[in-house]
Image (cartoon, rainbow, N blue to C red; front, side, top):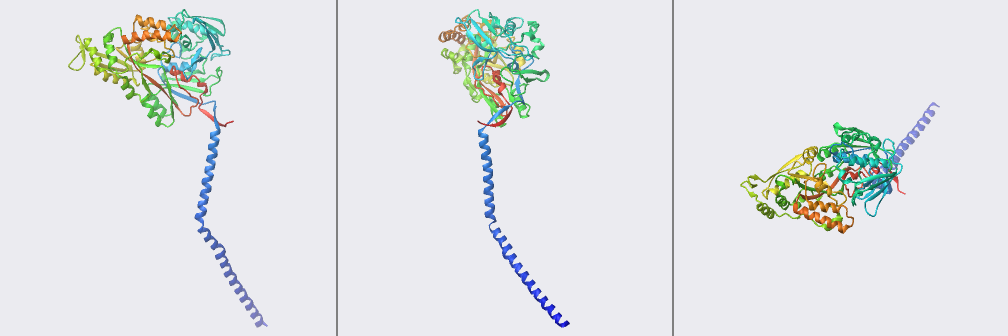
Length: 585
């Protein structure tokens, strides 16, 4: 029995062993052909799979980009309130008073703080500002302005016609010494009510309405200030205006003015919450400040800086035409430059084309006339547009100026040496040295002195302390150039920089500003031009292009033609530094 059971157990064990080996063999075969075989097949097609996944990924990214692009194209950038804009300006800002303009920086500040009855927009067109409209009498001697309602000063006091009358009185008072006084000479005003002002002129004055762009002063803030003390009044550092921005703080020691948005501005609250004007000596310093992210805009660049500005990749250049004339002004009352023959010879020796071609890279055009308004184009050019060095030499020779061994002409032992003064760190320096070379060819020695803007004004222009002045004058929007060439404007604060005195020119200028008919007016100015060319009190050189550089983050700027550089701020309340994309409707 025991042997039988042993036999049975061995037989069952052998069966289990055979079945186990069979199962292992079958399992190995399954793994080999079902698992490992398929993995090998997958490995064979892995490149195919990778390529397809790459195609799917690229298509997905492209679809996402296209969707975002379409949304961006159809979206509109909505300006948002807030932010801060800092601009580099030039000159002193300690006098923020529209009737006492001193520097370009002071004019910029006044444009942001004050409003005039009218204003020039960024297309060079005159429009109403504090005045909604105005009427002119048939005889051209009475102007009636209708003021906006609801305008308030920064301190909340209502603006009225009495403020306009006060401003006129301040300008006309000789103790104020406002350079605007000649324009308003003899003008009277009355206020029938708080919203109406009537100006009466002693005789017609065609460009009178352009004068009403001057900022209006608050009577309630200044009526107790003596006119002779207005120039040193604290008001000039802490002014109250009606403009889009109010003064928050002036840091005179570091040349910085901080302005805050006027929430009650009658044209709407500005988007940009704060504007800071920071004064610099030159546009070179201003450009470096931009690179250091200390400013977002530069009031004006020189043509030679355009390529450097473009290298930043973030500065946007806004170009505008301006009615400026850059020229050399002779002191005609004394010294060598009182000799008409010398002045005429220097005009012949001057090559404007060479100056513009080599110094301005296309950002200026030659000019030879003291008139700039297109309406006076029929008057014609003033001075020869081409140089004639041989004629210049002959003219000097005939006037008794003989060439010496050193190439410099002399007369009665006096060398033909002139001193030219101009503003430093501007394009004027390069122009002055071009003139130095051109005049040397005629036997004239020109010594060039470059000084700061403040020194130029106080030590040279105001006392008329120079032989030759290289400078720019802004001719405004009208052909009237009385302020620059009439003999009554020869002394400070007048703008007759050549101290020019001609009865013929005076009569023509006086007649030209009162005539309203275009052809008749052109005839009057033609008489002025003829006298001016014959006397050569100055040499007009070129008209520059205004180059305004602002960071691309600042939006809303649109300038084409500016009567004054500060007019770039005409619609500053629409500028923004913050935006939000919204779907276009």
